[in-house]
Image (cartoon, rainbow, N blue to C red; front, side, top):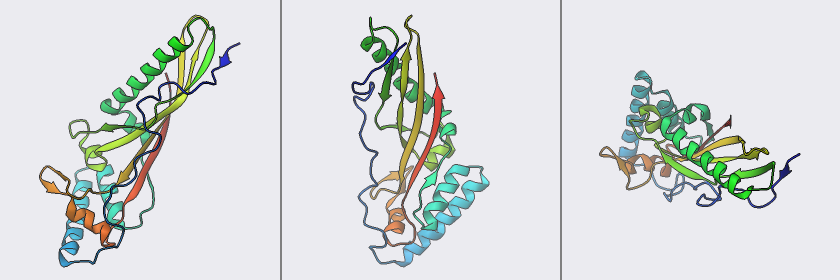
Amino acid sequence: MGQTDLSPPIGRDGGWADAEPPCGNAAHAELPVRPYDLLTLAAGRAIAATWSLLGLRNAAGMLRHYLGGTGTPRRVDAEALLALPVVRDAVDAQLERWRTEALERGCGRGPAAYPADSGWRDVFIGRRASRDWWLALRCVEFRLTGTVRVDGSGCLVVDYRFAVHKAYNFDRGGSELGVPFTPFARLHETGLARQFTVSGEAFGHA
């Protein structure tokens, strides 16, 4: 019968203990509304409608939620994210690290189970990976937690939870493809929109 390793989780080195907080824009509704803010709001709604017509469901949903101004958390399909090759590669790299560290720690100890935790890490989703998810999230944080089990012959089985996190906001001074983010950041700062947290989870066996 195997034993459970009670030392610190494997695979944590390099990961963050906490997910990143929202950016340092002005607080919600801190700034006065200007006429051009209303133009930005109308433009944002038109962009969301266009994305929806183009089948960019996640991108349209995220932008509409931002413009809706509730600030309530939003769930995403973590399994769909995990199916993207760029995300899958990042996750597989962590799982391989878990396997290596479990074998190193358990060398000569017989059957054992090791808790594992990647800490929070980020992965960039470019437009070539998925135009929809690129427009929806662009960059997302993920964390793997789980258990690596090693049997007497050295074979490994990994059970894990894949959690994702994103602070949906527009960074002042940032831009993408020449489109400045500051006008969209002002929508939060003037109370015409509101930042929110994106999260989701999926489970795997490897």
